[in-house]
Length: 279
Ligand code: MG
Image (cartoon, rainbow, N blue to C red; front, side, top):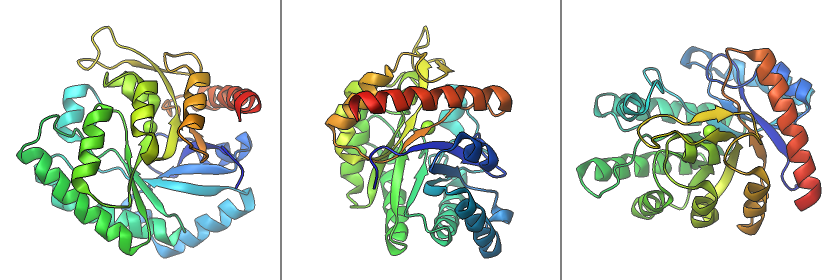
């Protein structure tokens, strides 16, 4: 497979990605797909969808899970609502995650990504419960020959490494999103990438600026190359840790589709330049 094929984060009827038509117009060969709504996840839709992608020459490399009730309004809300952390919805969400994995399998996709939620920084009951439930999910995915990719950002690289070791499953990996490290204030992204590098099986090329009070308020997501990640350094470090998979651009402004497409277009040009220089 070609090193570093470009990609974009795409959505059908849920999530913040670009529409498939836009991914096609942008000319990328791969996408990460935000899972469609529950009622859309049928075998008929999977087949129809795969036919469309085939015509467009696009391959899905990761299906991302998301759940009703999640909110990224601010960091405290995020801690309360995201992923498999909230105890009241955990069982229901684990069930839904298994269904999403089965839909991904119908699409021929061998990786499911998600924001698992805030992993407690200290060992204790919250973290043990999350470890337990992550094992259950990994074991289910294993039966589908799939991997689970944890989206980075909500914890430091060290906590993420401890968590992966505690879960102790060979199909648990990382989707590295350098901007999230900045937006959530959980550590300098390049240093984090060096630490978790051997677990990175997919990435989001996204950029961001640090908040005045990192970790307490959101940083700002900005177009690729205009933030504090340092894209050249990011790609050089991916090279260093041996990552050769897709470079998937994520720009989370679906409310402004024209600007979203234009900015992703510029991101693609930037990545192509850097690929020519480094790759
Ligand atoms: Mg991301």
